[in-house]
Image (cartoon, rainbow, N blue to C red; front, side):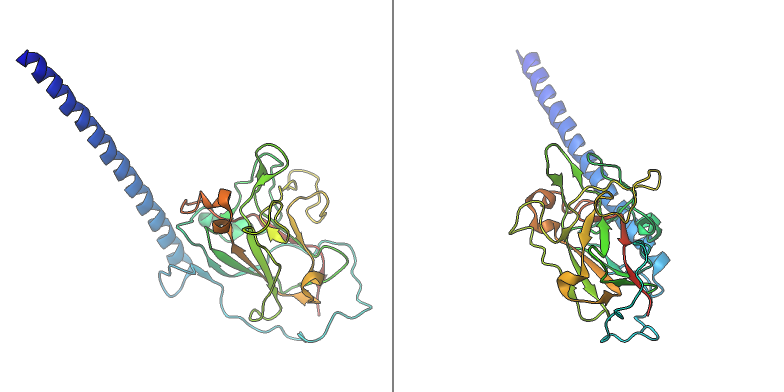
Length: 278
């Protein structure tokens, strides 16, 4: 009997030992992962900031300089020749402030978000992206040429939204604002907490189809995918800057991922359809 009790008692002790060991290993792994993320962010900051390590923003692209010959109060001349749509992609990053421990894509930043989109279709989101994290933001510059208020859609923002069955996509919505001088901003009304999919005037909602390896024109708003914006909606003749602010924390589904290294809006590319060179 005592041998039996001793055996049972020993088994219980052993089981608790295994459980404690498992919990210890899990905690060690979580701690190691967090430290790895912190180290990657710290190394990235040291590589890109002359002033040393900065937690937020981790990227600040030089000074905000004025453009020679640009009259901010003047519109685009009525006889301006538009030509064909397709004025290029992202030119510069003015600032990048990821939040919530987001680090995905930073190793290739900013090249990761320059050039055309790399969409993978309806049911698969691109991994060629940079994550903003929940509440993070990024400011992009387009100076040569400026983004112009041309015929119809003026620029397209590509994320990596994908369909998980049915019409809707897994969306990590973001508010888009534009500016001429980088000081006064004009925002498109994006309210994922008040509206339902497809979240009007938000980015990070539509799938992306255009890719360098296929023949889909990244400037075609009807085929390329992504989320489209028109400067006419905010009353600007042209814009030099685009600010993307993640609002995933206001969307129930996306909010569940906040705190992960790849959470929040994932920027793939920005295509400018109409450009203006003063």
